[in-house]
Image 1: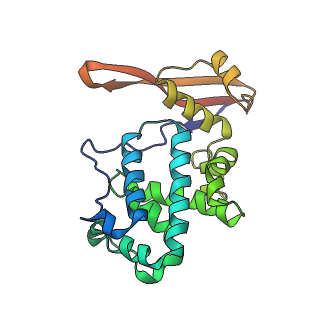
Image 2: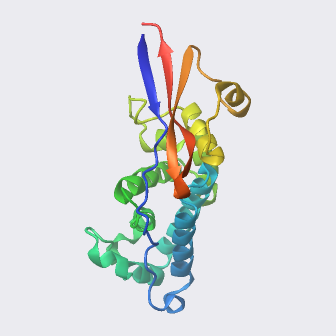
Image 3: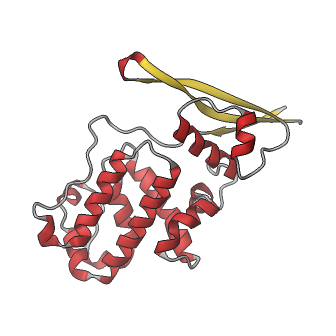
Length: 226
């Protein structure tokens, strides 16, 4: 028997005191785009444990704002001058305007644990869609259709690096319900049929405040004959 294990704990945890990136002292004087980026950063902090649909929507907004920054040298200059970049290695420069998407996604994840790793993955996924002809307004749908992992790691040969469509749907359901989801229930919820063979869902206890908690699916394991 060989075990193909898919890890569903894909998202890194945040520090308890995480805060969104700092806007300029006078956002209005810097223009509406910086204000929109700051609002997006706050939304991403507030909805850190939300559904995958929200993440895809946030990434679409990031792509749309990055396109606007690319077309507006004054707003790009304001973005480059944000205080957050002062302590960041390889901060954007005025000459990097054509690469606005990379830096917008990076900025949005500056305050997160493993922010560099996450921003790199999400940037690759969104960039792959844009390179394939998707418009910024179509990013959320493209990410749902093709999968973030598959877009970010197209040449990956390991299931750990590139989970299946089933795994991504499982992750969304776990995040939405916050409790064990059994195979029989999943059959009616998944868009993609479950694979053949014996399946095992492994759960673990997730503690929360007040000595309470809930069970969550940790991984989906498929056993196949040798």
